[in-house]
Amino acid sequence: MYYLQNDTTKRRTSEILAIVAIILLVIDTAGTFLAQGGVRFLPLTDQQSGILLGISSIILFFLSFGIGFRQKTRITTVLLIAGGLILAVSKLIEPRMGLNLFLVVALP
Image (cartoon, rainbow, N blue to C red; front, top):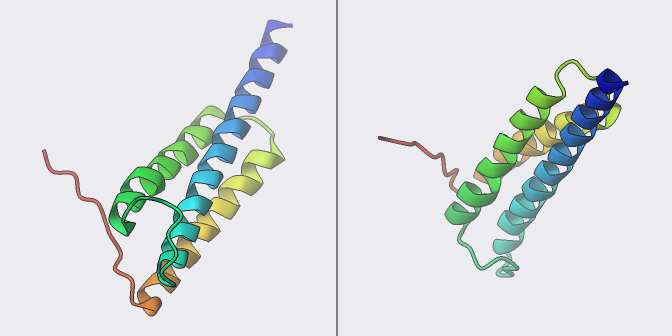
């Protein structure tokens, strides 16, 4: 009984983290693309948005994967794949639109 409840809790936590991560990633990507037209719905620059929303979404994706590693959940799998595709496509399109890729380097 406890084992099944623990698996369900892990699965649900993994799904929720993946959903929050993809929402943050979509907000960051949409904000970056819309800022090129002069419309900003976030009071952040592209660099601040990438640091606050982009990196936090990547961290949440990794947490989601780590928590649900041995769980059979299609929702998490689909969201992780979709998040990777959104991230990869946006990072391939942004330089072609004249945007700078802001890569964060953490120096101690």
